Length: 430
Image (cartoon, rainbow, N blue to C red):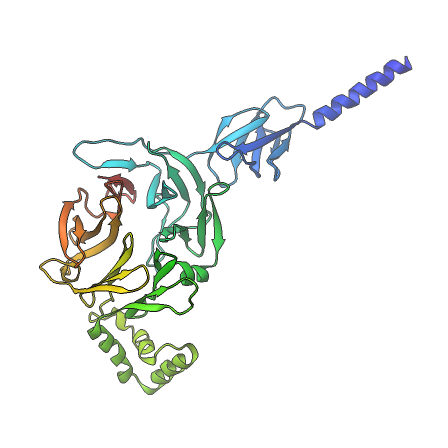
């Protein structure tokens, strides 16, 4: 009798242990990684558990089934219910639209707008945000978007990977070396693909000094610019491998603007001159430049921004100095191969004031340089850009008031707002 009671007690305790050891796990459907902070709620609505760092949670013996309630700030959809729960991130999107007489909508969403896009690691990568969440502080010149997402889509327009950004986002920055950065309101993140798509934070100062100025990379030689919004001049430099002394390739400045900018110092009072001179002693910035900044000469109608466009081709660079109406060709080692004067009825330097340059790029498939321009009326044009700076019209784009035009795989991609009364941008191609 005692033996039977002992066996029953052992079996009873074993059953308690087995019940106590029942555990579930929540993982990502895409990465198969555990998800911590998931709230697992029982069907009776009275019990719940939160997953630990391994994505695991305890299952009480009295439950009648469980459902996932929320996963922190992510928007997930449950794809599998059981002891192992798989979750996939959800973004609402419209199917690809194919129209014969109008451009194709590559990505359009009733909930999300496309803030920016790049081709990175061979995939179309987009910065998405809820179109109601445009953040435009009074003292900010840039657009910022709350509740932004990074998303990559396949050739069918379907999102294959996506994740949320915790602070208002601004734009992508893709370097010639293939690095992709995400600029947010107060931070800079580098987009990484290994072991899965994620962001690594870096200091804003290091990005401004080390990555943003880079505009070319050939034979391990880097071309960078010194442009800042405070200066009415800048230069292109080449930094060769194993060499700390950069070589100046081209200086860009509007001579009249520079003279007017520096003359501001002559008409300042004595106290203001002392402040400008002290700033020069402390930081090395010429007092004339400081004076122009102090008097806000940049807001004057006489001020002209220094403008130059650089395009990296297969084995050299072409620098189009719009301010000085010259074009120089520089090989991969920094030698100036050619210097031309921009001439002709239509070139980069002669574009009328009512037309602006949106971007210049190199089409690696057709081996030609292109330039996107836009009139004040909103009409945008794709131009062939020749070595001497001459523009030859190739195509008028269908939609008006587009943003961020790019050419890829023989097609033009850009952002367009099909509903003018709403801040909802779609990605189109034609």
